[in-house]
Image 1 (cartoon, rainbow over the protein chains, first blue to last red):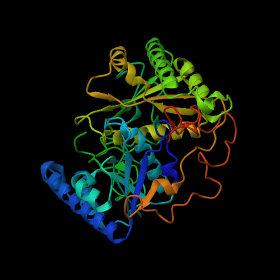
Image 2: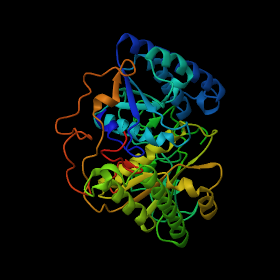
Image 3: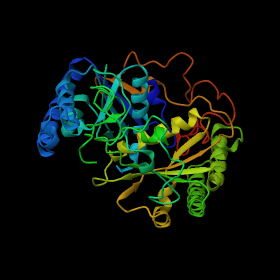
Image 4: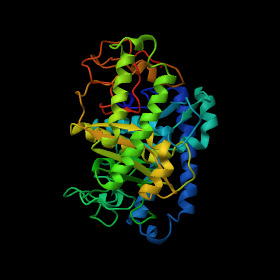
Length: 222
Length: 222
């Protein structure tokens, strides 16, 4: 939490607040509420986005393994050791850049957790039950509920994250113009078309820090 | 840039893009445009928020030193070695949590810069001249311009960041409820009411990474 709260914010106002839910009665009830919402949302997405069709019919396909990992994640969410609700005390009307005041702090939290051997996942599952959570936890209307972060010991081991190569993400001088120096360091390229996943349960699964929301399937939509 | 692009994003979609402006003609023009905007905005704020009154009349007051540092920052902005425009390829309508897909990457960038000895500052100065920048740099309308990050060698040295104590930022079980374990580590408390600033030019100035936008004055509004 110390690392999280040392993050930058506009004019150093530090409008971020972290509501930590561990094992008190209110925490247990809030975690149950978010966990139920997550199960409903994932169940609907699993059907809608075809996580039981195509390559997902093969149980060892990336899509099928992703679906299984997500199912485990939402099933266990209510019993996660620590669930943190990062919030933002608004001083302006809501708008699309307000997250610059809270998500850097969230990333500091995820990185610190990883450094200590914990896994962290940032999701938006609270949105589904936000009015109930506000009542239950006395969160003021003037405060944005910006994320839901779960923390715990990863079931597998931390692996390399799966990302597009630098050349697709970094431009120079104009939109879409390649930056010749933006080349992935040796041994790090690990994209959908790249080398196989290092170990089952590691890497892109929800237990890995650095993954926000349901991780993408390697053969899913981009 | 590699650290930035390894950040998490919803469903691992990686919608963040980084447009790097160094010293080409378009980069120079864009930096000039943003620099001019920054000077106008700071000039107006300096007047409006009383940066020449009260304690700011004393040249060694925190408020006065902040104002001087901000002035230096905006005056030098157009000639900063590297200016990066983090952008977000939107896949949904704009909304207040979309920054969860780009600001963790920005924070990774700031932390990596700091690790290499560079100073980074995240601001919103581009907003003032966004239409001109979109035309100049061919940034699509469907892409959010999420921030302006300047990178360079800090003029001073990096100091401890100035933040509220943990007890004001971390709650447990319900809004506003103190978390008894949330205590600043020994030797780290460094708030407005805390120990004096370690060295001139370090800490809360714009050259320090971890500071987003104009840093706050120690005796300014919270």
